Image (cartoon, rainbow, N blue to C red):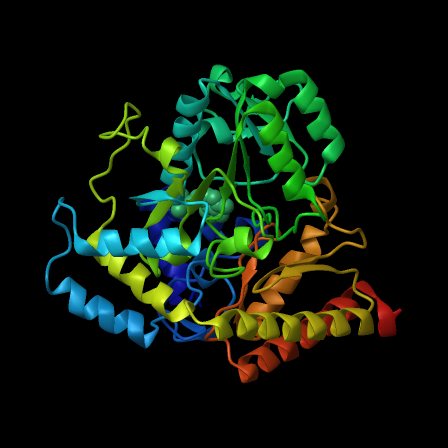
Length: 436
Ligand code: PLP
């Protein structure tokens, strides 16, 4: 008998393209049908069939405090009774701008927007205006939202013209984007020689989160910074995942490096739609109404999102938070690796702080190419076995798993028991390890 999620998905498919409002939610990468979630509390979510799961998707990384954090909830309750939108400046916007600029020393001025895509789009426009150049350098597998010039794929060879990655994007739009592999210094050198002086901005996820989690190799980010210094292009750190997650000051504090422009989202909106972009004053002051670069939004700096963001940052501004997240991450990593080696499952576990991905490959994953060696059939089986064990992972091999402050030691142990059981089943099915 179909459960309620299945019935609702059936109906949704007649009303919403693919039944979902964002593609990866449809579970296409893992087979099966998406769960419809009706509520969350702490680290758990509950579906409309009343089954509870420990959640590692956590609103795609937005919920670092977990679902329904009491302080954020209280703040929201107090806020919405006063009105939800005025289309005027509010005090909260100034407070959030202050909190962001204090957390990120490279951000002297910041503008609030509603989504990460919008933050990236605006940062790129600004970089082009500031430098008077057109080209953007990005890295294969980094996702920066669905902005046309960044929704492109590499051409047939390194540094050949990029191609649209979706119908509806023109070849002309794609042609100004240069794509090279992440962590690949040689390609960067070639790009410098060929296009250096035409590049307006290098945009990078300082830790890749959208081909699965892939940390930068030693000095990679520093070399990008040097590339920008030499060529006169701007370094944009897309910290929409890493901002306030790796540390309070994001990847820039974690790796001790400053970007020219930074995009933020997810965590700084406390689970509501809010994103931001910011950087040096001289660049940011090109924005209207101060300068000529147009950028605007009805919902920008929405008073409710702003208060959720402020409340979240208040909780995070505590030195213990990131130590605690690291400990939770370490415990999960250790347990998963132990189970993988016990059952001889080929696993490359990439983790940095509270974000991780289990790749089912023997290769070290350092870029999109090596990530693509992961056996997605095993991931899909693992995902579904974990679901049966009450654990909800981000539903694709090429996504991050996100630990929150609300994941208790007990829940981490339960997760590891689920991993052990799932790996055991996979080993039996594939005749690995003890089942050879
Ligand atoms: N940049 C990064 C690194 C992201 O992970 C995402 C979304 O996951 C975006 C940009 C786009 O953000 P949004 O989905 O809010 O438009």
